[in-house]
Amino acid sequence: MLNLCIYLMKDCIPQQKADYRLEQLDDELLLYHPNQTVIMYCNAIASLVWQLCDGQRTVHEISNLLSAAYDKPYTVVAPQIETALQEFYQQRAIEYVGDTLPTQKSP
Image (cartoon, rainbow, N blue to C red):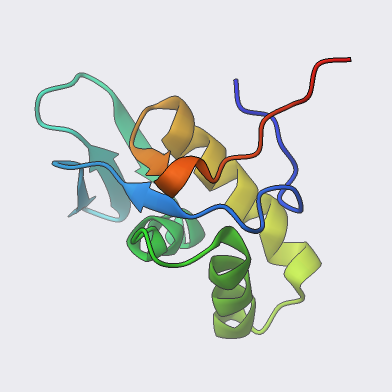
């Protein structure tokens, strides 16, 4: 399980993996891969995070964009962004470009 605070991830560059789709079904947004059985429910922020995972923007840039879009302090939106990124990563829906994901150092 990826368990890094958003501060450590600020310079990471997330990118969507191929073939994942974000679909609206009634009032819900669902992220899925047509060849897999996992479906992820996405709230509005998670949906925007997904759309901004373009392999160009850092986590910090994504966080700043969403903070401005929601007119909320960074500290309010950052936990929701971190949760979305962790879920996407755990479900293998994103990867981090150029090994930008920080690694934990051994003691």
